[in-house]
Image 1 (cartoon, rainbow, N blue to C red):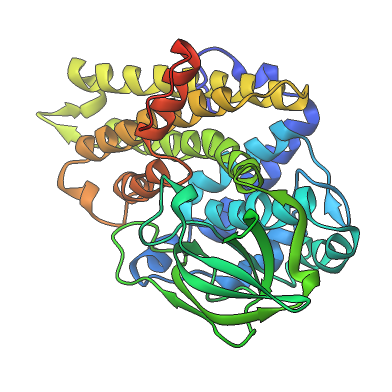
Image 2 (image 1 turned 180 degrees about the vertical axis):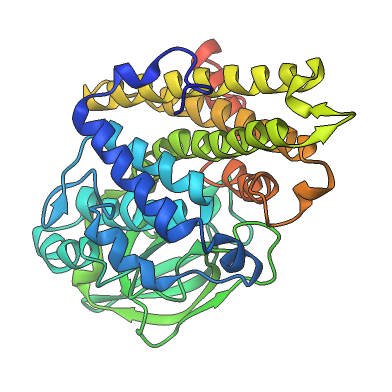
Length: 386
């Protein structure tokens, strides 16, 4: 954060190692993402050429230890997510899907053989993974999934469909969650398996510099070794989702900060009625409100990160952060766009792109409504989901 946005000297709460991680990722965003993101977004291109660059920075599975993974702290991962999303939510999402979802599923629930087979190559960016949970009719209610895996001799056969699956069309493996006679189980599915088909969802008004797909699974045959042995029931995918949600808590503040800084710079340079926009009371009120929410959101993210590092993180902590920071970030981006006037609807400026992306971020990994109900259940002890 710069002086105008860090009202509380939050930088002083980070360790030298954490600040070094921030500076390293910020430099990558400034040199590689910012000069190209407008074109990538407009042309709906996910730049696969930066995957190896991200791996080289230690961003893939960065919070995992062993198996060739970087083994960085929860706060370092959060800082990296924030800096990446200051560039673009879609590019932060790649790191999240690869590391917090696909790699975490194998790391948390896989066998030693599966971990050794896949995690080093995924950390190096040589293998891309995706995470198939959401279905066309099962988003917020994954327990109603229709995808089914049946026993067939020593192996399995999967039939079903998934929707909004990040990276599926470029992935080499898919973590597919399916109902079985023994409840929900997870499977590692090589994407070249006969019967597996991934189709990018187009056109999109959000997350255009990333890939989301429909997946069709038609008589997909797998060996017995494909199942994740330690994932039984919905707890398996939910433990991975909470890893991804944690990154969003930080990432959303990156998008908000970038929009705020754009609005500050623009308001200081743009003259209206012979003085800068920044000299008007209404402008200053907007900027103050943005800065307050960014500072509160940063403190919230940092506290949740420290709880995670201490092994004290609980699901409702994640919901507090995801609900608050996405909600505030999207409002900051919209307000920043309004301050830019007509220029704000062009790709010369970032706030509307960030706001459009955050429509997706606010929806995936649990909608506002789902996280509200999780918190309501925690507060009252009464589940109100049904």
